[in-house]
Image 1 (cartoon, helix red, strand yellow):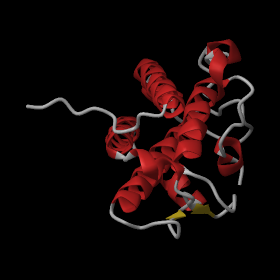
Image 2 (cartoon, helix red, strand yellow):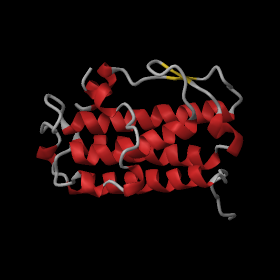
Image 3 (spheres, one colour):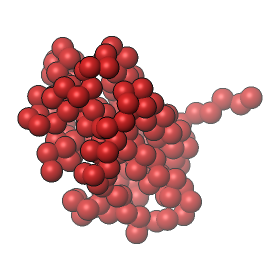
Image 4 (cartoon, one colour):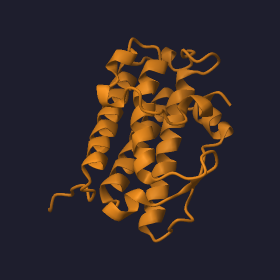
Length: 182
């Protein structure tokens, strides 16, 4: 069977893919360490549970993956990135811990496949969001990397800002906190 490689060749995108994949692996490592009783515990964001953080990141990965698939399918600059509704995040947070873990893991794999298969020219395609008038898949990739590293800190399980790779420090975070606090 032939090896499947990233279609992106731009060094910045390839670098961000590496950072996002490292962030995903780190977040999964933290999830593997959690016990069942850890999921409902409140994070360092007042009133936000660890389960809500995991739910948001899982559902957000699905939305990002679906956006990439639509772009590959020919939906151009009119593509709309849907924001995960608060009710979906809250409902996802009620799933049993194993189901929540699976939601995150499976959606992360799906997103990684979509990133791998996204052609070079589509990384700079403008897409519309509900809160930012316009962004690109390349920007969303960077946002995802930052959000995943920030999320490991938010879970309050011993990770600190010093765990965030130096290349990402100071980069604008995605919408993690805003989506969780609405």
